[in-house]
Length: 219
Length: 219
Image (cartoon, rainbow over the protein chains, first blue to last red):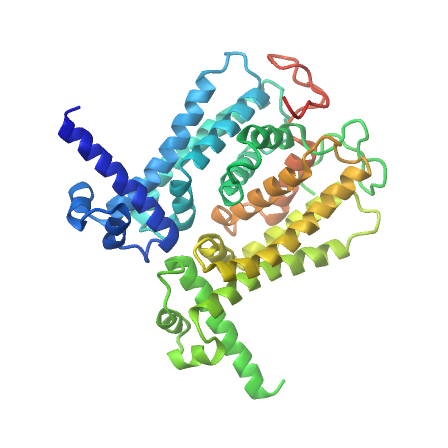
């Protein structure tokens, strides 16, 4: 990379980081190119050199957010042994997902807040990436179910939506210096894989429900 | 209620509903009293009759959102028998929470998007309500753990954050006419209480992990 190109890449990164913070704080409608330039401590012209419009910028911010998560999770899963269990895959994916969204917290929060506010075409483009990420999770869960590791009567799609929803919420309360990502990932995996129920005690004591076992889905 | 008061209440509700939609779509910074008046099809003066400022309005929108959830969940839990199990309480609370946030979807989405954007004093006031709601959940989980129904080694605080995160995410994908709230509530409860693991099969096949059982929390 030539010196000039390297400088351009640094300046582009500065624009993107500033844009993520401004979209996060002011929403899509409340964000102007001028405010992003001020936040990046650049002249407005430098921003237009990289991105022609607010829409190009928000599209880049949304895509960077989901790409970071996809790359981190894919790499973590690739590092697992071939015969890794569903539990291991889920714990690994949860850990990687949490690490990524916390690492790029401004992008994550900007996405959470403006995703429903941006023009439909931008949302649809980003949604394709999000759907491919959802498929990765679906595959992990379906594979573990096929191998008989996970319950045959579990609704995998809802379980996936449940897991990803819980993960994405962590950016609201996770603070550096508090619980570690390791702890959170381990406990989250344990809730999803093991459940809260004490298998020894079952549900007999103090329960008006029938004892545990495969439950009938439709009433 | 006199006719005049009733009319005033209707007009106030119209202002709030409009405000929720405008905050949802334009964020805190992007919202003006003028835009809310237009959305409510009222003169700007009628809005100021009810709310003196944008901050009074967003505070009302945030508080209505969490109050609706608290009231719905509390009432649903009160209707349960005294000896209801932890599973029943969780399934009931999940169902009520989902019903409430989907019923007042505009307020829920406005909250999700602007909560981190509003002035600190407004956020702190609303946070007190949210914390009291969090305590309700904590109590359900801790009680079930004390009775031996839930695993002694489960981290209840993280489990609660996990559940509430997943629930609040549903507004992003739940569409009327698709899955019913009953179905979603039942499956979510099942993930949380039972876990995905097939208890008959265990984790022995194809797993590089030690077999299931109480897991050591700290490494």
